[in-house]
Amino acid sequence: MRGEKAGAAGVAEGLDMKLLVSCVNEKGGLYKLEWNGDTYSLKKIIEGSCRGVARYNDHFVAVMDHAILVLNKSLDTIRGKQAHAEVEYHGVFVHNDKAYIVETKLNTIGIYDLSDLSRMGELSFDPVGQDVNHINDLYIDDQGDRMLLSMFTLKGLWRNQKENSGVIVKYDLKGNTIEGVLFQHLSRPHSVIRHKGHVYYCNSATFEVKKDNDTIFTADGFTRGLAVTDRYLYVGQSDSRLIVPARNSACGIYRIDRNEKRDKLFIPLPSKEVYGILPYH
Image (tube, rainbow, N blue to C red; front, side, top):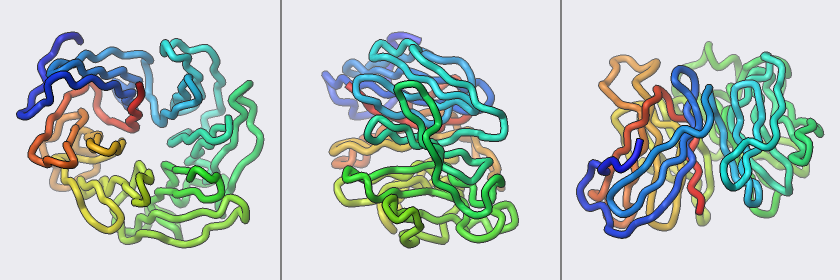
């Protein structure tokens, strides 16, 4: 898809930027989205159900349902490793040349050496081997001693809990223990990140993006996939799923000017469900 007009008012002239956008399940894949002024181009880099995506020096790590891929700066796949079906990868974060990957069905976070994609170890949550908490994404601070996790519940099987049992927790990587709950009573939270001392995340089932305890954006559908820069908020929206009543929502990416919130554009994607968003240069 080339030369499409960005359908929104107030698009800045001369704006150049790039995003990697992962989409999961039906019609999934990894896209490169580029803006040049008020036009954009969209190219599918990888076919298949793609979840987390992270920067690795001048390379990238893309996580499929059951595979890990390393891409070079030209977005060519240079290394890959298949996993057994019981793992079901979700979010990924790279720190010190290691990939921390959420293994949702096992209730663990696998730690992988990116030089050869060997599994070095894990962080486990009780009970291991079952999708109990539905951990889905993570963020590690610059010092490497604290991690943020988004999950559907902290206690009990998530499918048996109320929809607003979701939490964002802080995990002590040195002590290998959950340090505390930062935010609770959330509805299917995803995409937790930290930017300039604040925690941002998607409160997905209520179509929200939150900054700490405050709702800063409400979409037309299920929110998942989030990136924050000093100026912009990038939010993924999926076709309505698991929502009653359902709204008519398209799959795509919002870009919201944080200084002028009326400056909002939406780029549709030829997929069903956004999972991750990664800005890069």
